[in-house]
Image (tube, rainbow over all chains, first blue to last red; front, side, top):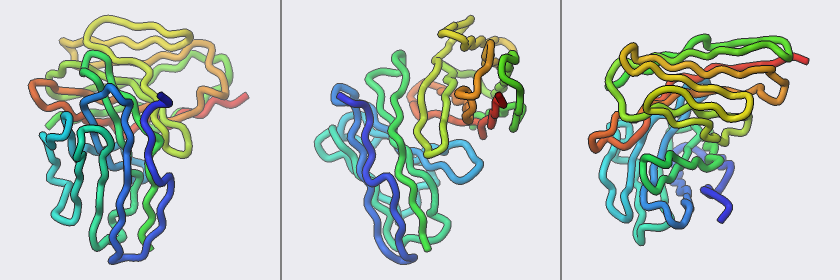
Length: 113
Length: 110
């Protein structure tokens, strides 16, 4: 197991297009998190899954954003009708339990032009 | 909502210097994390603390729960330590997500 994988690493898209990102967590980790990081800022929490259940969503997650974790393993984050303000690094992290901390992926950098 | 403040925002130092980065937060937490982020975005977890002090190699992290304050120290700093160091807190009690500081951009010059 090589850690948390995110795909793609980079995505350039035109405004108004839909994009989908994928995160593969460490296999035994039941918790999965999505964060967004804009330039010069710390990451901000978007949403959290425990197994396949989406337990927490930030108000940052507008109705254009949807996240799924259908089988409690990998997760996808979809952004519909992208806007320039969606340009950011989208980070995924996973955890087995909070006592053992988090493992982060390398992120997907989205640029909306 | 927890407010996480880091200082300094930017720090440039010479190789070998002792480095201190500070983090304060406003609401009680279950754990505090120190993270390292290199250009390109990947984040590496350095420490998770709920009390006291932890040491790993040249890195030392301390936390004072009563004062809601943590410090990350780097001894004998090296250019490869150059990165953004981010403090993040977990409030627990069902709110599992992390709240992050803005990060400290550290540059160690040879």
